[in-house]
Each structure stands twice: as structure tokens, then as C-alpha cells.
Amino acid sequence: MVRRTGAWIARTAALLAVAAWPAGCEKYSQDSAQAVVESAKQMVAEGRADRLPTSIYAELERERRVLRGYITSVTPTFTWGPDPQNDKWHVTIFEGLTTDPSAIVLAPRDLTTESYVVPASTPLADATTYTWLVVGEIIAGFTYSESRTFTVCYADCDQSTGPGVLDIFDFLCFQNSFVNGKPYACDCDTTTGQLVCDIFDFLCFQDAFVGGCP
Image (tube, rainbow, N blue to C red):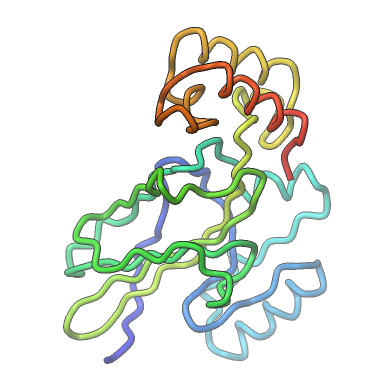
């Protein structure tokens, strides 16, 4: 198969737009300011100067939180495209800031629509950072998206004080969702069934809140 490169950018309906290193068969490190400089040199040397805008390093933790992107759902919906040139899609989700095959947690294949919902039977883990990418396929070859990173923090309900920062407003946000039976509040604990609001969901949120965001 011949590898094609596409201009489309993968995104998610549930995630913030975040900066990440390009994926596919290579990775350019952004683990430190010096690593970003070295990666930029490597991009130029390899004729990949078009990827220089993705070389971003945040010195402060609050800035790194914005780059990572925080979501509250452990069963998020991923969307991408549109790209009518591709016949089917393959999604790969890795645990951590890596695209190493050993870190794969979910890898749905042969999707015929430009979206994927993480099943309730295999939810993502709370307080965990993930990397994901999409590969489009036609007879001629494959189109690789850039990788994107995000962090699941279920307790970050309100997000008014910044991504990944928990305070009393997050607790009140959950309480309001719980009272009104919203899916978000009923999805923390599933021992009594999916989307069933009970005391176990409340206790589950309490544990998540005390644990904090990464």
C-alpha cells in the first residue's frame, strides 16, 4: 500500500482543540523546551517544515492543562473529517503521551462513518491522559491524521476556573446535574445500570473530586 498524506485535521466533538506532535510513523518530542527546539530542527532536516506550528511547549502547569485538553466523559464521542476520499476509518487510542503500540487501549477498525463513541462496556479511565489518531483508507493507500491529546477528569464539571482546576463550583455543577437526572451525573458509577442516578454516582463523584485532576 502507498501511504498518502491528507490535509484534513482530526478533531473531536467532546475535546478542546489542542496542540500535539504529529503522528503516523514518527513522533517529535515536546517534553521540554529543549526537546521542542531539537524537534523543530529535525522537522526542517526531514523536509517537514509545514509541521513547525505544532511545536509548542508550555512552561507553566496551567498552560500545559490547556494544551492537553480536559473532558469529563469516560465515553466520549470522537469526530473527524469530512474527507469523502476515504472508504473506511481506523481509530487508535493510546494511554499517555505516546503513540507506541504497547500503549493502545482501544483500536476500532473499519468504521464507515466519521465518528466513534467509546462503548460503555470499555470506558476510558478517569484522571488519565490519552493520545488518539485516525487513519483513513482507500484502495490506493492510507491518510494519517495528526495525533491529539486529551485528559479525562470526570470531576471537572463546571470548568469556569480553567481546565482541570477543581473547586466548589464543580461540586455544585454535579449536584445540579444529579438533581435533574442529567446523563453526566448518572454515568459515574454503573453498578446499578447505565444512566441510573443513585447514591453510588454521588459517592463516585465525591471520590473523583477528592482525587483531583492530573
